[in-house]
Image 1: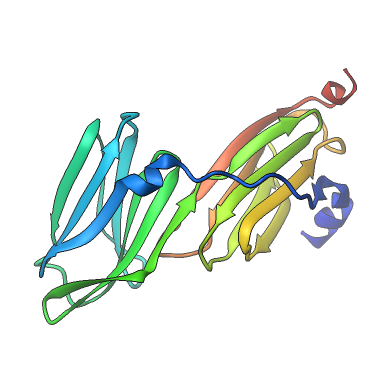
Image 2: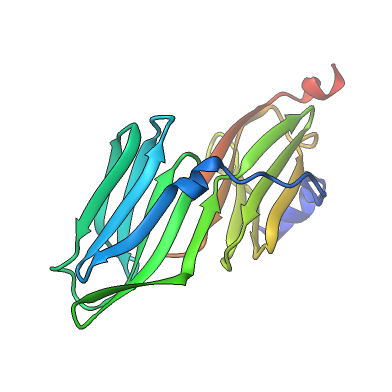
Length: 209
């Protein structure tokens, strides 16, 4: 893999770009302990986006998962009385972002900590001739993997980073042959375990038109 990275050294260009505005939906998601044994989710879904809710235990095992569509005001209760004592994470996926909230169950009581709450924003990909700009707000303390595969699934680039604030990358495609390429951004956390991918159709002549 090191050889491939050296051969494609020109593929990655570090760049400074404009900051990304946080989606409005961030302020519209509320997670709280509604009783000793229950969590309450409240949000506004004006775009009728699909909502995904996942709860995982400390080992990253999924104990609850659902996806649904509901427009307008969404209010849901999750009865966790049968949940064993331990540490858990609930992830709410909505409108190109993930709301992540860690909580514990001790002596039959659900406890949430504000310090254990963060938001993961889906990266944006912008095309400029032979360049692809990747931007992602990173207001959490986790590692992020970057990879590029060709249409046959061969890995041609990989990188592991721990961004602070904003992840910004520019990829130069001019050295690549004509093909379809997938750029994947992965959250390296077993409690979240989420990947975002973008498919790029690359034709070298585009750069010279």
